[in-house]
Length: 206
Image (cartoon, rainbow, N blue to C red):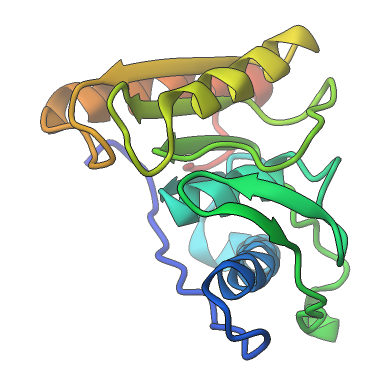
């Protein structure tokens, strides 16, 4: 009703390392890759779907939010053998997994996204660069799975280089906020402000 086209993306699972930590990170590699392929597909079919290829936002919760932020902020992306700390899972080594490349017919289209809305996510990347997409982080102050401090660190890193990042806290832990109407209004306001500033009017729906 607000004028958005919504596409649900279900990344394929990877079949690499069997441990929980390595499997989780391997799945993240595939999720980021498949999200990028989906964005390329949307741009390839933008005309027939009446979409604006310059107004594509990725929205995700928890793991999917981390994938969306990883696609938006790829600098500092992990290489095989790197070690990071995941909340409640401790130190883990990034697995050597190689997701498939995009189909040849989509290679000419960009996988760039124009904005991110994250529920209980954070940026895994070490660096956010000027000019990268803006993000809205909706995060529980008492989140036990992805601590609130990680969302704060993401926004601090973004704003330090001039990338817009808004942090919208709530009190519902790792779940999405209970107040749907206020959340939808906040997301709609954020996206409209960004898209209207970046794209001339009359060039299609989000």
